Amino acid sequence: MVTAGAPKGARRSQADRRAQTRNALLEAAARGLSTYGYANLVLERVAGEAGYTRGALYHLFANKEELALAVVQWVEETWDAEVGRLVAAESDPVDALLALARGHAVYCRRDVAQVMLTLRVEFAGQDHPVGRAITDIVERLAADCAALIAAGRDSGAIPPGPPPAHMASAYLGIVEAVGIELAGHAPYDVELADRAVRGLLGLPPAALPAHDPATEVNE
Picture 1 (spheres, one colour):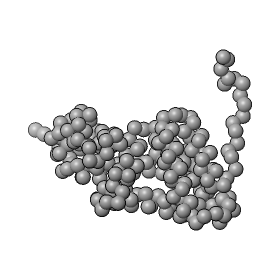
Picture 2: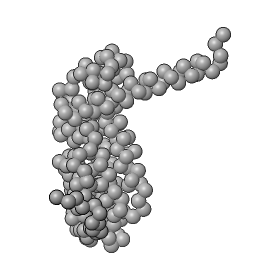
Picture 3: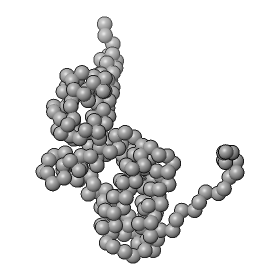
């Protein structure tokens, strides 16, 4: 006789396996999109790199477009979890902008971080669902950054200058460029992201860490 709890446990187990498969496929697809772009993405290769069959991929995603849209959403969610939470934890707008720059540099150490830029460039000027999804995300982020810049100016921490919307576009361009060009070069990626946005925003340089002879390496 099957106990009442067994089917529920089986369903949970099946749901867990499905979630594990989905996450593996999304991460593999994100790597593929970062490297090859949308047009050159081969779904069979994505499935193989994730350790699954092409049939398993099509069981979860109807086609390449659906997979790419799911990747865009997944990247947004992981970015929010790893970077967005750092921004939300700061009550001061300047600290929030610096936290975003530093957090994004750390996020770019992952091999999937370039997917948004790759797809945004590929779909520039096209009316495509994937391109529209990325544009919506970028516009929301730019609006949030513009609001933080305006708040920083209201407090006197950020000096007057170009309109906040233009400043936000420049800010995001710098954050994205530093993150990509210095991906994985810790700790300089974080340090230079911080320096770059401080310069753009007209903030004083960060205080240098205290000299600690104990950390020196004799050459």
